[in-house]
Image (cartoon, rainbow, N blue to C red; front, side, top):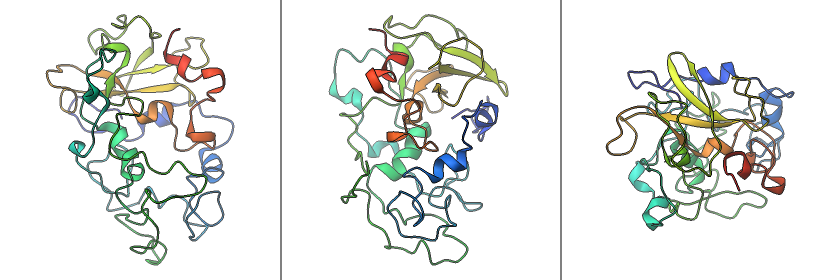
Length: 264
């Protein structure tokens, strides 16, 4: 999530600047497994009109969440065991505490709270009643429900892109690990941002299918971080509003998604 120099979240400013795909976001979401209503391919019985309430609320949102009006409680970053605890020599970049947009994703996908545990229910007060729906750790047919709180077997999140080297003061510097592709960079609302193009072209405009790198500052970064840097987070590769399999930003056929960032 983008931040301004004072550290406050810039709510969805980047989303406004994106070149969107052919289908409107609402149409893509309604065809995806994030449509948890009875009319969609999700798995929770509910009123078909309540498409967004499982994640967003017009009031009473989680104040610390770095996405618009988040409707679920976030847990402490210390809840999670991250990839760097493996002590592998291949982890060359600094790792920040689990946070940013990844902490928001995990508020649903770590399996520690029920899908009905929203902060603010619908206006009817009956659709999302306490205990109505299971914990995500319980088996759900056809869904990738829970990654748990041990993240060591998942792609690293909260990690410097390319092993570091890119900073607000050197936004186009080479990455320390040469096996990563150079990202695009720009300034939005006076905040330095980075992304990795999936289609090439170097247009300077971030598209919905490009892989976002999330700007984190010393307030939520790794120990000793002094300036804003780009980090890989869950939403770098996953778009919660698409209807693609696993919510990937592009198909991973022939490892296309992996090879967007990684050089063979």
